[in-house]
Image (tube, rainbow, N blue to C red; front, side, top):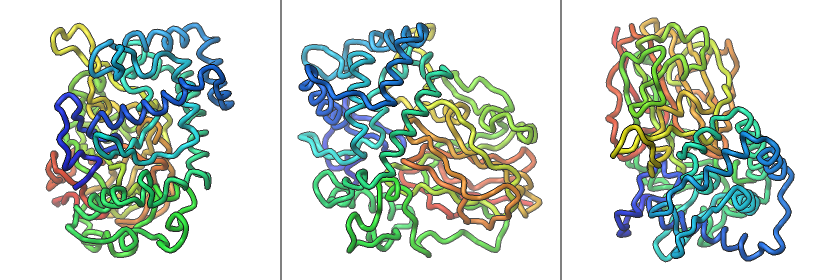
Amino acid sequence: MVHQHGDGVEIPAESKRHHIGSWLPSDHRVQHDWLAKHVAHVDKHAAHPQPLIPVLQEFKELIETDSRIYMFFDKMWDEVPLRTPYYNDPTGQRQIRDYRHMLAVLNRIFTQAPQWNDTAFGVGMVGVPIVSIFDYVMATPSGHAAFLDPDVNKMLKKVLNEWGRFLKSPESAEVLTTEGTGWFSQHGQSDLMEVANAPLKSSHSFEAMYICDPSAKHHGYTSWDDFFTRQLRPGVRPTASPDDPSVIANACESTPYAVARRASLRAKFWIKAQPYSVLDVLAHDPLSAQFDKATVYQAFLSALSYHRWHAPVSGRIARAYVREGTYFSEPLFPSASDPRLYEIDAAGFRASQGYLAALATRAVFFIQADNPDIGLMAFVAVGMDEVSTCEITVRQGQHVDKGEQLGMFHFGGSSHCLLFRESVRVDGFPSVGLEHNVPVRGQLAVVKS
């Protein structure tokens, strides 16, 4: 039973959500309750508000001194419909009312790492708190424009860097406890290990699966980020067929999202179908021209599992770099009743994975595989909203063995893509719709000669 998935709880249809990667609870009431507590605290102290931290004060000044950005941030809140499920106030008020209120609530959450929330409805964890604040406004016309704006994204990068500094601080480790809201609470550990053990049907404890010291404070983790980038113990995720170069290893502990054949170099990734636009996914790199009509495999990571990346093949790192992009952009969704109009899709990022692969901050790798039947292939680690920090731990020109570490997401992660050129005969990918992760380093596909 995974509490974050809403298992064991009867969730009303209007509150049921399927969030890719479980970054938000399946019971939307738990997310609303979490936000309501922060809003109540801010509103209670409205007469004597806490001064904004410097980076949020800078954000406020950007909004108020740039007419274009002011228009976006003023209008986006008014464009959220005053109807269920977009508000959670009996008087019909939105939880976040305007950009000033947004900044005040951000100011509040910037002193807390993600933690578990035990509510009257059930237990859940808000792994992406900033998304919870921006939630519906991201899909409004003004929100769509704002979160594509280069100046806004530069500012958001500063905001997220500050959030990241806190998540690397010793103070952020205070949520790594056995208390009810802690990650080592009964429901916290239960969810972590249910997800971790599912791929290989194992029965490991946390300390048997991950490198830690259960006798030390916070299991020996020095910060939230140290916990989130935790390492696996040797042997728990063996590399698939290490001596067989035809076997592709899974680069990330992840659940299959899509397999696309003959993906075009350029496509309209922003339309409803979100076709892969290879040139955009690969950041317009000169090497991307070789990937016209590519096979693309995409899978998403879970908030509850492992966030390091590993080489899918043995070979030489031809290129490796981080491409900065958007942080909170999602597409405009056509209305079901009138495709000329747009409406908010409660699925949000779940329905935006192809779009994010082309726009979000991402780490791009080109690997010249030792196996000539593969040749040049690509791996892309795609960031999502506040978990867009990508760290590369290999260098260009380095030879890596299949299963060797390539890098990691900090503060979480979104999804990843593998791209194979048209001539590569690759098949045997796991089924899209699988309910659990495919193990990192496990067999993903097979290449035929």
